[in-house]
Length: 293
Image (cartoon, rainbow, N blue to C red; front, side, top):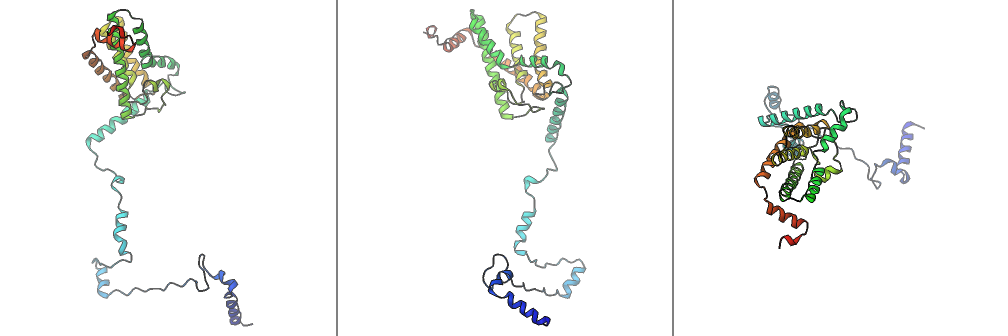
């Protein structure tokens, strides 16, 4: 059989209804739904003047095939303002970022008791005990027990003001920490007692603020010998430093905590409650209404 005859016979077989699906693209239906060749369009030649201008460097305003969406494409190609890098930061921003970087670097280096492979792991228990001495829970509970056992008006006056100062410190530091939400240098999760004292973030350091507040309060209202006064100053300083050694706070957080405790101490001294007001508070808290009548 000649080649032309075999070609016509194959075309006749493929055009049969049962073989039409072999010649159709996916999704097409019907015998006439064959893909048609896309006509080839030839662009007209540019005039000679335009060609000469192009070679001479003259800008030609030739419409593009996608001219209708050129404006939208230009907008999409431009990066948004928030994705652009700020090439000219302010001097204050540079200084602040530099100080924060130095603070993080120094705090990491001073965390010698942080982690299971710490350099000063041998004194870790002593540092933890020193840090716990500045926690809010033992001081609030100790003040309540002392107030319950106190029988003098002067002692009750001092203890009530101390209790109010501790409550003020917990609320102030907890509010600032919730506002700033700065994590510690080693990213430790707060414990159970930290949640009770609202000490869940790093800035400011609650232990440092409380240590300065309590130490200044005791120095102002207790008659102590000179060695004990020195020990109180040293304890307030070491209680704040212990939090840096444990990797819980940055160096800047502890410094701000010490300043905050000093400011709270002066506030408490300026709004000192007298003995009658303290007795009224004790009567209300203990439901002893006989003293109020």
